Image (cartoon, rainbow, N blue to C red; front, top):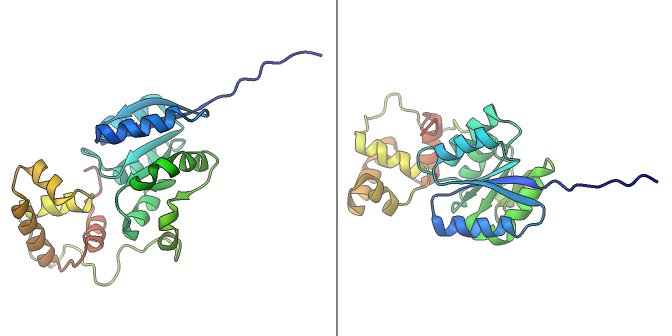
Length: 227
């Protein structure tokens, strides 16, 4: 009887997160999984896109709030340009709106950072087999209805509204991408108090009451495109 050597191919994974300590934790998770192989890391969205184009991983694990190109915009680009690459998004946000935007952008997995140690490898394996993985803590909000209709009553588009200042726009864009007030202050080199003022003033002009409203407004007006 002829003997055959069976070779088990590991699935390739690329990681993208701008927090070094968290990235190190992700690296350890992947390296301890026998069926997964880490082939690259990035700390910005644009660097992640470049690596994805060069190495075509089976799965890219990406932080939603990436500098340069946020995770949702990156998912949209990768889905259009490299459809064989499956995206798993990591986030601190439990807001339903982020789940909807992620799925609409083509992401196949959505994992809360607080659950990553237990859930990330499961999420990767699920999307590798063609499945969709949403953090168990979010199942009830992710699937209680079909994908969200973003342009809804109560969320206004830009026409006919008071004009935002440049700083108000910058702050609201960063808030929509998931950055905290502290992170926005650091990025814009302004005080936390100034960030709070710009955010409140801009949201007030647009009649946006919650973070979810800001995210929906950002989506309607194209703020997630290549930012």
